[in-house]
Amino acid sequence: MTALGRDDLERAIDEPDLDRRLFITPLLERSQIGRGAVDLRLGTEFLLLRRTQLPGLDPGKGTQQDVDEMQERVVVPFGEEMWLHPRHFVLAATLEYFGCPMT
Amino acid sequence: MTQAPPATAPHIVRRAFARSLRQSIVMLRGAHAALPWLAGTRTPNVNLGSLYVAEECARILVGTNVDLIVVPDPEFMYSTTSWPFSAVVNTTSGFTPTNTRRPIVLNYPLSDADRLLLHPIFAHELGHASVDQHQLVSTVETELDNDPDFTTALQSKVNDMAASYWPALAPTQISGILRARLRDWIEELLCDHLAIEAVGPSFMWAFVLFVLPLGYAEPGEQHPPNTVRIKLALDHLTRRGWRPHMERVAPGVTSWIDQIAGDAAGALEPPFDFLRDQLTRHATVLQDVATQRSGSGALDAFVSAPQADEAADLLRRLILPVGLTTPLDARAILLGGWQYAFQEHGDKPPGLIAALDDRRLQELVGKAIEMSTVASAWVPSL
Image (cartoon, rainbow over all chains, first blue to last red):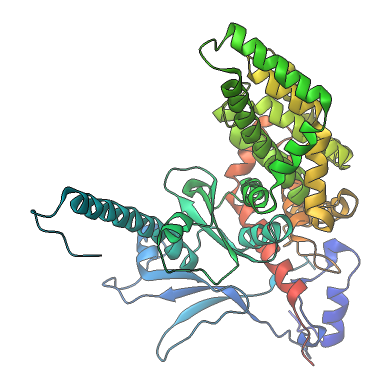
């Protein structure tokens, strides 16, 4: 695997053949495309981890109820704020969705 | 609240106290009823895409001075409450609301929270607020009363009902009943027409899916038969240029809807036959009032259909359909979601039901609407 430079990234994003295009949507500003990287933005969906009596979550055995007990899904509409306090851990989705070509 | 009067107080004083107690209970009930709305604003169950579409429809149909609250309904029905608390506020002396924004509470069945394809029904519900705000029923009634054929037919029906069905009622009473039912039917039909203006065929597809299990050709005092509603809605879609699009993306479902509309002319008991015949005859009045209200905010078939095609194509590629070059219109993405649902789940009535169970598709469409709204509102940094 090789890293793509800015020119390669721009070419992939502008590829006319949609089957070969690199989709980053919504790409709000072209300046997000850097040298070998694309800057992403925080999205609107977050998972806050709660402190519970559960020792952890076993992906193989955990039930949806376990997941719900450990996590709280928070939706923060665009333009609003979410405060992250010290020692607080959250999982955040990016604003951008990706679609990578098979190439 | 004043203190309870002693037992020796005059009867009229004790009755006044009891009345004030009853009034307090009514106010308390209003406050309790508001709790789910207040909680709903903090934790909306519907996704942001649905909320953005509902807000856009509210701006188009009602106006810009609207506070929209979308909350699940414990009775599992779509409904609208405009100006909640107005009764309480009106009976509370010394309180004058200074905020002129119209609060609208939109209720939806909790089970439909993630069924975005049904949410075009929000546009119909917002139609009720629009009808109320802009006195649209009165506009239609005035047009009807200006037509001598209508007034003659009304008088004839009043005589007929008095002679054969309601002999115990005076003609003025019968006329009052007919006019009241006519007003209710006009309001429902106007809301359907306004919803079509706002979201196009998406409303029709959501509508048939939601209402047909509840009734087919049976009239109600407040609702026309669903066959009549579907026929008039189809006529309006045709007039607004949507028919070719519907036939192209869902020929099978369109043919099925045509059959339902064909049943609108079936026999109805009096006086429902009068209501149906008059409103069908004056369909263009309903159409004109809805079109005039929505103005330039209406979903344009010639602009939105290509956008819906693009959205459906991106969904087929499992790409979030925000737009290849510019953000797609939120309502066109919804239309594209329906379009893709027909491709994926079949262009037939069972396909509509299967589409509703496709939560992944609906989540993707909702996210795309959210992102297109963000991209449209984005102001590039310097």
